[in-house]
Structures are given as C-alpha cells and as structure tokens.
Length: 399
Image (cartoon, rainbow, N blue to C red; front, side):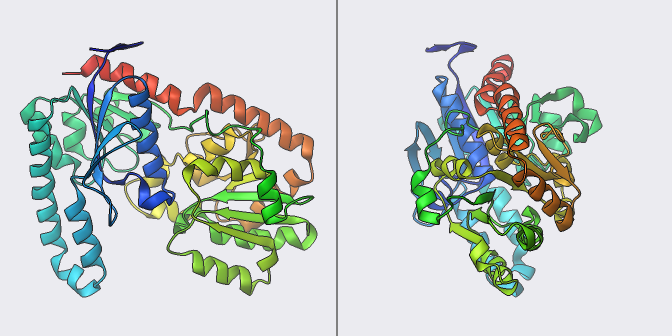
C-alpha cells in the first residue's frame, strides 16, 4: 500500500448526508466547501476517499470528482424532502413518517455500502441521523471520527473515537476528552493575495473606488440586511464607495428590493452565483471584507452561534484583506480586534458603518490588518494544515 508522511494509505468513508458535491452546479455553500476541501486534501495525501452525500437534480448516483469517489446514496430522501416541503399541509402530516423512512433508508444504504467496500475509518459530518448511523458503525466495528459543526447528540458522541470541532467548550462535558480541537480554514493555495483582477475592475467599473465585499448565499443570519442599512450610512459621506455581494440564494430578490428602496442601486453590485475557483478573484478586488452575521445566528438551534466558524472569514484573511466581523460570528476569536480586523457589535448597522468608514479612510491601517490576517491564515487557518492533523488522528484509530 502507498505510504504517506503520516502512515499507511487508508480507505476513508466520509459521510455527509446533507451535503451536495459539487453543490448545485457551482452555487456556493460553506458546508459543501468544507467537505470538498477535506476530502480533496485527504485524496492529495494519498488516501482513497469515498464521499457519501446527497444530490441535486441531474447529478449521477456515482462519479469520481477531483479524485474523490462520490457516491450519492442519500439522494432519495433528499428529493422526497424537497417534494414534501413544497406543500406545507402535506409536510405537516407526513413529516414524522418521512423521518422514519429517512432513518431506515439511510441505515440500509450505509450498511450495503460498508459491506461492499472495506473502509479503515468513517468520518461523519454530524447531522440529525448520525445517532442512527452510529449503531451500524458499532455493529460493524468500524471506527467513527465525528465532525461537529453545529449539531451534536449523545449517542454518536458516545460511540465515536474522536470529535473534530473548533471549540471544545461547547461539546457535551462528558465527551470533551475526545475532542481534537481543529479550526476550519481556507485553501491557501487558491485564496491568496496578488491575484490579477484588472478584468473585474473594468467589468464592474471599480477604478478609483473603495470596494467592500461580502461572500454569502444570503441566509437570514448572514447579515445582508444590516450591511445594506450600514451602506446607506457609509455612502452619505463616502460617495466613492461600492458594495459587491458575491453569491446567490433564495432571499436575494428581497435584498435587491431593499437596496432599490433606499436609492442605492448604483452603490451595490450583486454578482449572482460565482464558481468557487473564481471567488479569490473577487476578494482580491476588495479593499475591505465583511462578515456581518446577525443575532438570528443564535436563534437557529443546535448551538449554531457557539460553533460559528465562517469559512468566508478564513478566505478573506488568506487574501490579506482586513475583516470586519460581528461579535456573534467571532466566538472562536478568529479575528483579533484591531490586529487583523475590527469586531463590531451584533445588529448594529451604525457600528458596522463606522468600522467601514475608518478602514476605507486609512489605507495604512487596511494594509496592517490585512498583513496580519494573512499571517494568521497561513499559520493557523489553512485546510492543508487541518487535513495533515486530521490524518494523524485517523492513523491512531484506523481499523
């Protein structure tokens, strides 16, 4: 078998039942980015990775993607869920039956896969059904390493050998001894400063303007409403400022209507969906990058607030951009206040506006914060470093 720096090549089963790879034909998703970068990183280090996930319409049940063996075995429940959710009254009466069916279907699909493919370890992105999957891993004696982003349950935490998460303090106290605290990160090979973006400057006519960027899919807690309100304050005095929103999602029409209602159509550019490989170009176009998450973040359940580790922030940092982030999204102290960016109060468009104005008026400060951000990204927040440490953990527990 092929040897790597840390040991023997492994067959790794990466279970991410709520994730689509690639995500909807290129549309952005932090979860999909996370899973892809980890899987690809393990492949690049010589391991065979089976990624078990869901699918969008038209995606094949099985394919090799970027060296990853993608097996979309969770497709049927995902499509059924989409169908039922279209009709609220139907979903109300059938939701419990759906979850029962989903548990049975996924358990059977996993059992069939693991019986046909020898895997040294299972790495699972924790979700609602993970507790059910845990009984299968226990019965088959396949070591489970758990990746916890926002959802945790007692059963899988008990069964697993190790827990990977960026914040040990929010894991159930009985299982904190299992935690290997690893931050998420950015691919520092593609997210980097110095990328040529002249064609984007011409396309969006940004020469001589201060550019503020946010990369997001427009989820309610991403803070686009707050950013638009802050932009109104900023542009009242800093008229040579433009805001670029990179991404697309379900709520973007509402955000565009708010921009129009405030008379700021000429101050906002909505790029729509951008391929992951091109996101670094847009970040390099910016003077300041923002992550204005709002208080909805901690109202979405499963302690999401305390697990918040936004990938966009690491990507901003890797491109040497000063970052403005709200307190609710900086629980893990990713951004060092007034070292690599500015931390502002949650739900405060005024504070957000003040921070933006301070940075766009002070180029040396922007440069200092950006330089520090890049340093931290390279030292602590790269997917490459994350995967190396993850591989070491797998080698301890592999079957």
